[in-house]
Length: 374
Image 1 (cartoon, rainbow, N blue to C red):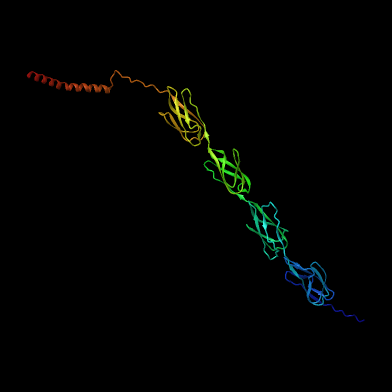
Image 2 (image 1 turned 135 degrees about the horizontal axis):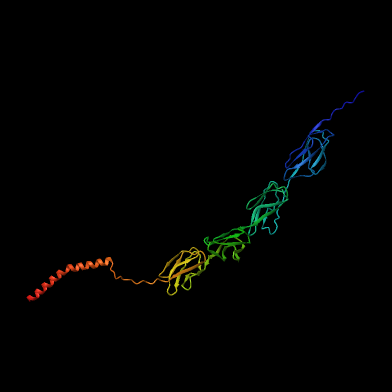
């Protein structure tokens, strides 16, 4: 019996290719001549698309059948084969989709762009708004977005893009120029968004009170005020506030015994940190002996002027003037019995008189003789 001899069919290499804009790959690197088959796929690079029905046998012998979308089946291979395809550079639109009332718009190019272009959308904020250095795109992933203060740049665009700019209200600082000796003003919120309001609280310093109003300079208006502060309305720019504070005043009450006298102080009431001068009026037969008060205040008095001046006042006072009756002056009593000093003076006088007597008698005798001769 003679058996037939069979010879294996040769296998031929199949190659894809990398034309501009994409790549073609096939499932099998080798295909059996005549009966083998492999599926070849065209894959575009970003920004490109596969041109329909453009896959072809670039070299060698084979047939592409059953082409669907970007795949074809290679059959009938009788030699080494290279498969290629055509890819097209896409063009895309970039447009602004920022809604009305968002605070601005994005100015984008009106011409088509490609994957290799870098279109820029410039932010156009409305009055009182600023661009927030951000831009949303639709569909997501259609481009790479990089933003700065002026707008956003798109790169690697792979689809028609709709952009939405992100805007926010501009913020404005409210400065306090109040004299810190009197008090201070703090506003909340601060900074203040464009065309919104803020409440400014007045905090008084020791010895001062808020007067219920403020001075406002800059891009804001003074609204209503209450005992604690004021509203600033329609803030459209930076502004400063100055709270009105005045010294607290304290009443001075006379607690003197009215039967003995009274005391009157000026000024009354007295502003915080200032001094008063009090004048006493004693009742007949009395005189001022001193002044005392509450609050740790010290006094400097002039008894002859009947006035006393206080140290600085920091609280309400109760002042009491003290009056006393003057003591009557005692008459001087002369004793009948001389003191030792008086006795000594008397004896000294007698001694001097005794010593001078002989001389006096001699002068008298001489005087008489002289008269006789005449």
